[in-house]
Length: 116
Image (cartoon, rainbow, N blue to C red):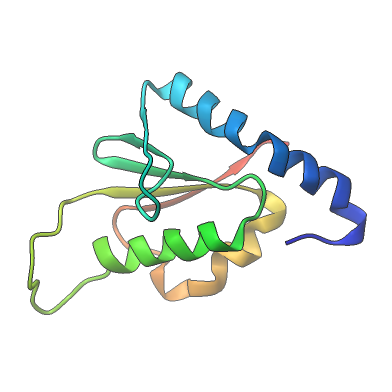
């Protein structure tokens, strides 16, 4: 998702997404995850979703994981591990991350903006 003014920057972020993920993995000592929906990098109990390219599907996967693992329930029908879900985005994409404002304040939810 982009605008004409940001097209070149957005295309470069799409092309460099794997580098962003690998760099975060290397810096943190984390493990690359191959399964979709659980994040890009795991540093147990943290699951990191790296979204430098404003990929809407990645936002959907992140908020689906938040709903599955962090949203309070009256009764759990199955075991839910205590995890932290972290989303890494650019500041310009923060309004999209705010789509589900009811999730803000949930224990274990963190959103970080790249310094750019």
